[in-house]
Image (cartoon, rainbow, N blue to C red; front, side, top):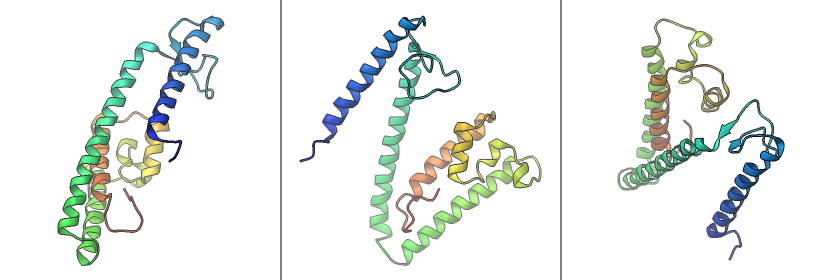
Length: 185
């Protein structure tokens, strides 16, 4: 058996998290910082970032975000399991049905990403001229995520919610499609 089983890994993760939190909380006082201040100014750090201070009270928000992420992951797994069972019963492991499903999924996703930009934009644009909150639908997944996480733009929350929900649905839908390339959202 392996020494890297999940039980030992969880205990190791919990111990490292608690020790990091405790050391950061109490080492800040030695440097003249208020108790409860976390972030980049505390002496124990994994790199320097520009002003990323946060207080211990904000852990509740981070915890809520973690719970939401866990629930979304569970929903994704549940939806994917049901879709996989449906595919096994109705499409099969090979043949023309599997090929037609891959074509249909590709057609729907590409059509949605094309038409959503046409319907949401207020005029004809070149791709470079599109507003950033609409242009994420036409960018590749990597470029869109980079723009979302590292860009300085403000996004319309309606478009952002539509982008998140549709990417969640499309990712679940095309996961397991009979193509040898894996995910292609």
